[in-house]
Length: 102
Image (cartoon, rainbow, N blue to C red; front, side):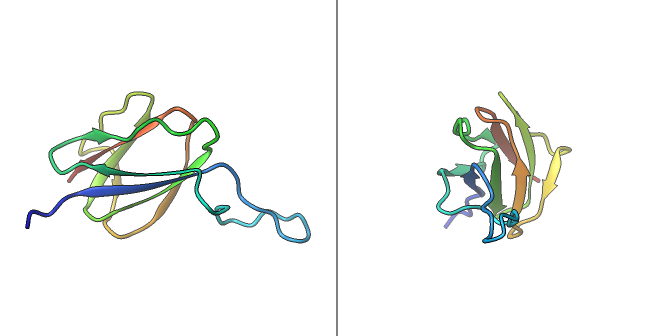
């Protein structure tokens, strides 16, 4: 089979608080939305983030570079993301992330 390059995105609105009202640095589950972006054939952008989304978790099955904007087009010199390593980013509602294979 052909290897597909995919970016898995989970969108979150807030981090929870513990019993003492301290912020816990993990996302509140379940995610607001989830997407899978296939960037096998070049730079591909996600759908726009939900209006409630404030941060996302991404993980990829292939090494890639990411660009965040309202209409992003990732280039190989953009933010490097290794395969299999989850990463969190604060984002703007309505923005998108674009991924390109490196």
